[in-house]
Image 1 (cartoon, rainbow, N blue to C red):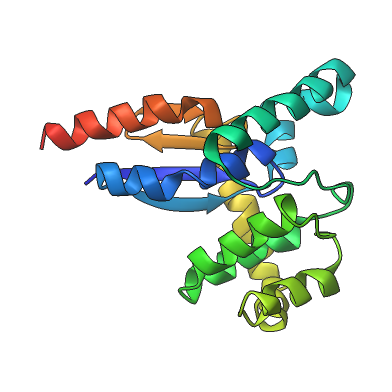
Image 2 (tube, rainbow, N blue to C red):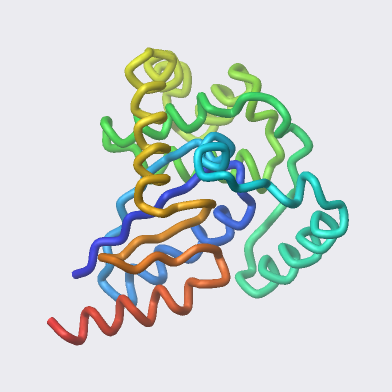
Length: 200
């Protein structure tokens, strides 16, 4: 059974798309995904990368069309979120809390949906709390705990670890010494996982 380190930030729509496929990949390969929430924009600053869809209008227009194609292929809902300009780091720190209290799966599913299927204002604490509570989670308790300095430091540590391991964007998957970046590399990831399983 292979272990996969999944470095992610909710703010990436391609990461949402990739996340919708992980259960199937795990079922077919026996892989275990370890989630590493990281702050994508801070990672980019560390490694010298640029969010090109922000600075290039043509690429931004293309990405909208491309995401639509992937949604059709995966048969998953999607809604572009207009509320992404502020600080969304509390959602990432909440993911660290959710890991500790064994609610990681439920929390991450809810937050990805908040970002990319329901277009919630993910920079508004109150809206996030209400959305998490509608998903059956104690949103206020999770986010109150996430506001502690410990989780800010852990998020920064995860982000630096990602940089140290060669990560430059989200979604990124690391299996042993191999790295796979992007929703469009899931086929390569799955092939590697199946090969690894067949050799054991």
